[in-house]
Image (cartoon, rainbow, N blue to C red; front, top):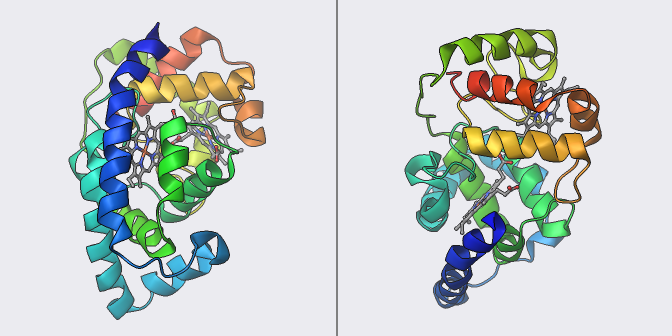
Length: 223
Ligand code: HEC
Ligand code: HEC
C-alpha cells in the first residue's frame, strides 16, 4: 500500500521531471560520459582548485534546484523517507551516486536520474550539498533518544563518530530523517536487495525493531 501511494505521487512527477531534464539539459553539451571519468579524482581536483570550485558551486546550485523538489531546500528534506543531503560527506555522496548508477543500490527514480547527470553536474551537486547545514530537530521522545544514545555509544560511534558525522567515506547520519533512517537500518539488517553493505549488515544483524526505534530517535536529533 505504502509503495503504491508513493508510486502514485512519484509516477507523474517522474515523467514531468524527466521531460524537464531532457529539455533543459539537452541544451548543455555533454562533455564526457561520467562513466568514463574518474569522479573521485575529479572531485579532489575541484576541491583544491579555487577556480574549479567556484564553477562547481554554480553548476551544483543549478542541479540542486531540481533535486530540492524531493531533498528539500538546501538539502534538508521535509519528507520522512527522503534523506537530507545537507552536510553529507562528499566521497560518500559520490559513492551513492555511483551505486545508483551501476545498480548496486536500487531506487527507480534515482537510478534513472543519475544516468542523466554529467560528471561536472555530479561533482557540483555533491559539493553544493556538502557545504549546507543540517537543520537541528530536537528529539520527539527524549527517553527513547536516551536509550538510543546508549546503544549508539556501544556500536555505531566506532565508524560514524561520537557526533554522527562519519568521515570522508562513511555517511554522516546526525540529524538524518527518522523515517529514512529506520527503513535503511532494516534494509541492511534484513539483507534487502534494495540496499546492502557488509559492514552495516554485520552491525545491524542483532538489532531488534525496538533497538532501531531508539537509535533512530537519538541519531535524528544529533546536531
Ligand atoms: C522524486 C524525488 C527525488 C528527486 C527529484 C531526487 N531524489 Fe535523490 N533520493 C530520493 C529518495 C526517495 C531517496 C532514498 C532512496 C532510498 O530509500 O534508498 C534518494 C536518495 C538520494 C541519495 C542517497 C543519500 C544517502 O544518504 O545515502 C543521494 C546522494 C541523492 N538522492 C541525490 C540526489 C540528487 C543529486 C538529485 C538531483 C539531481 C536527487 N537526488 C533528486 C528522491 C529523489
Ligand atoms: C564498521 C563500521 C560501521 C559501524 C560500526 C556502523 N556503520 Fe553505519 N555505515 C557504515 C558504512 C561503511 C556505511 C555506508 C554503506 C553504504 O554505502 O551503503 C554506513 C551507512 C549507514 C547508514 C546509511 C546512511 C545514509 O545516508 O543512507 C546509516 C543510517 C547507518 N550507517 C547507521 C548506523 C548505525 C545506527 C550504527 C550502529 C547500530 C552503525 N551505522 C554502525 C559503517 C558502519
